[in-house]
Image (cartoon, rainbow, N blue to C red; front, side, top):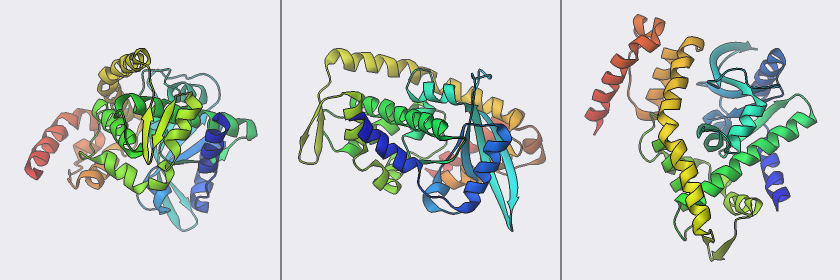
Length: 298
């Protein structure tokens, strides 16, 4: 059964992207000596080049930085287009470990059970290794979805429970109900994915029409809940550490954060010269302004 999930993941990863995106990924991968470059986010779904493209650059060897990934922002001219990208960089080994749930991180498997494309790979071995890692993300997410979801329900009920929990655990700016929009815009991606991942995990389940009924022993459920609760308690702290680190490597971080905030919430925060030059020092004031504006939205 695992091969069936692998084939599904590989098909998703091998989707076509715009030549501009492929060229950008190839440039980043070769420049960094990477094993592969993943492309994800709304631009993957829409096929547009506006806004900021999202890449993960996966490196050979062990993870060198304890707080990962390293995030940067870059603009690159391709033909007549100015392409803007947010680039996350980490080792493939650490990416695979996080995707399989063998780290304290919640972001990798929750992000890469969603659509992504392997736009550039160093070779076929790298391609297969990255495919296996993304499959691990699907399996990790699926077993937690079975634990957090209803005793019986549609596949979307389990995914909704999963994403609702991960958003609560992380330091996120998205509006409440973000999990519904994820499922709505990526309906074809998630169609049929959950039972494939459960089969790959060896998690028994029954079908009652369009309802799924996972059969999970009480001891297994408790073990998974303990696993999740430990990570949920650390989620916000880890993400704040990563945001703090990103301010030292992310050129244009304040502009990017303001753009993302407006895109997801409709709230506009002015990027003052002080905020642009010292985003970390300016964070408390920006957070207070954001809190006031969010209260005004209600």
